Length: 332
Ligand code: AHM
Ligand code: MG
Image (cartoon, rainbow, N blue to C red; front, side, top):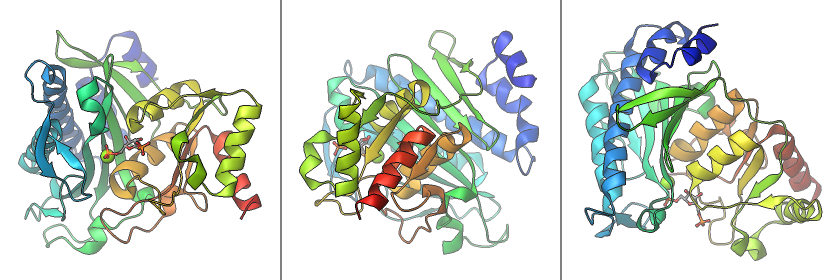
């Protein structure tokens, strides 16, 4: 098929997007262009990330974002780059960003798409040379094209995503995305400035041997989570936690495993954000044959109520997510 053909000839991401255009639900070329805009911004952020140590731009910027966390300078740079790419391209009418308090209404009533983005996730890792990532979700607006944007365009459940992806700025830089027809991964070739298809049709192993959770918060977990993690230990599974969501997710996606950020006392709804962290990864994992849950329901079915809403996240290999869901039910 097209994917394996593309793989064999060393295909660039740009070419792949073109080849796959017919997969899109509304194949007008605009979603392809939007993806290309995101890819260009990702290349720029990759360059800035690589330079961060050298250029001494990794330090704190002295501002805090809407969650009250210290904002690193590279977060600001990434946010500016993605905002610019998304607003100049013409396909987007509104943006939700981790770094912005309110919805960005681009006043572009002809734009068909809404984007939710975490421009640089894992920012506390920047200064210590650990992998960081960008996470994005793309929705088609619900209100008629040509009219001002409405709340219903923004507050769509994750199952309405038309595309989602992440960029991992790691030991090599990768971009992984889905448009609802499987998941494909691309690795960046620095000297050529191109992403090449390296991981065609990614399938999440049905089960795995890795669990990823911030174990320092164990005393705050609900019983079902604690019991599940105890059972992981009894089975002598591997504990792996980077503390950088994209990197933890990516490893588990390829190797088989589960990532958990449950409710804690400090964060009764968990820490991660539904709109621009959980939903994109949930769409990707389902497309790869895995599962994503908040403990009670499928992440993609959660109806958002606010922009920066948090959600517990249990995500990874299907069987493992089912096990932890059962444990939560059993202990509640
Ligand atoms: P951020 O959006 O402020 O960077 O926080 C999100 C990050 C995720 O990348 C990571 O999985 C999680 O926070 C780690 O949280 P903790 O340090 O509480 O384990
Ligand atoms: Mg984040």
